[in-house]
Figure 1 (spheres, rainbow, N blue to C red):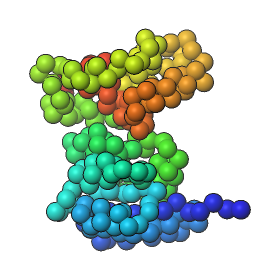
Figure 2 (cartoon, rainbow, N blue to C red):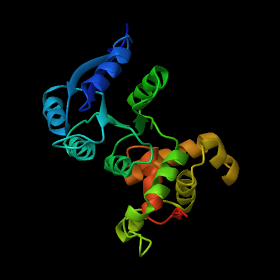
Figure 3 (cartoon, rainbow, N blue to C red):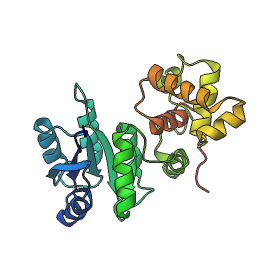
Length: 230
């Protein structure tokens, strides 16, 4: 028995972008585009009456941008779709805002078909479409806009780390530094399976959606130092 296809919604103010993405996605038996919207308001209305597993969300749109739409969508009660942000520039500060709002990663609009398909499938399976090192590079780019940059810390977010054990704090810091599970295992003299277990505990204790949010929290809490651009 085959599983139902992944239900996708495309949100972009450029019809040609939506058409191009749909052309690629609709060729796959395991993927199905169930709706399109031209801005954030249309997207929220559509998603209130249409079930979706993954939303491909443009960042810059008229009426309501992708950051606001992502935040409102993921704040709704009940199950919510995963959000994959679409952007033209990988160091766009709006991308950081969308990740902070709960998006599971970002994708450049000029990506190739294979990258698009891999990203959608990864997000649907609960993975983040963004290497921690890329998130770190993005955060360093927008360092001047991070909370409490002058004082260096966001006290509430630092307090949020209280449930973690010393070892979990070490793992969170390593994730924030952009290390892979294998690299963390080697650095902390742990089995890779143990690292995965620690990451699962961190996500559960801090109610984080995925690894990308772990990196953001590591920065905003001051667990990992932000290096301003020179």
